[in-house]
Length: 236
Ligand code: IPE
Ligand code: IPE
Ligand code: MG
Image: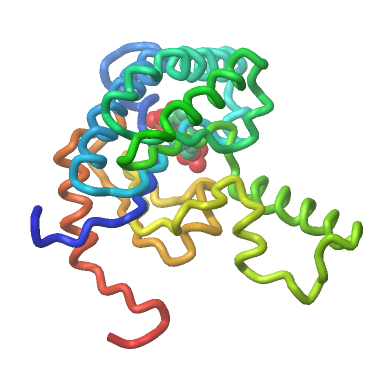
């Protein structure tokens, strides 16, 4: 992959766990467990090939619409995953959790903070995990905080720039999405990184469900990305 342009920021909507479970005559929960297992090789591979930021969508603000037992098992799985994330330290990655994280109890919130801080001495890729994340929720929160600052006289209305909004998003400090991948054959963004994907290249991959997603699918996606002509409204 030497001569290929590696996207700085790859975002993935990890979709298809339920259909994978159905295909294997298993409960949906088993699909989520298989989906969680698929993550680590992708993180290791992306870091190895020089991706700077990989963001994965783990739980959306709309996922609360699922049956309570599925929501409970998903959150339990995410909690378990976080509690076991120290094993990532040897891969030289940094970690960022983003979204409305108040859904978790203090033990998990402290754990996430501890992981982010301890991993910060690593020098490789940043691995971002979106939990209880919604792009609209994120922009609404940014708007509220900016409005509060204007009202309090901390910020002038005329000084609000696109950068001001970016600095108030959960993803403050993240670069914009270069390549957004969604397996499972759904052709939508489902409220993921809507501001940050304004000029992303989208790749909707059919015939692959997230639990079966392998490093070769990242390579295929990057090859496809290299065929795109990113003009940003200009001509090339
Ligand atoms: C994605 O898989 C996992 C989460 C939303 C957390 P789904 O559960 O949406 O799987 P499908 O779309 O039903 O196959
Ligand atoms: C998006 O997948 C959310 C995550 C992968 C966390 P969904 O399966 O929940 O989205 P929809 O329902 O297809 O839009
Ligand atoms: Mg789905």
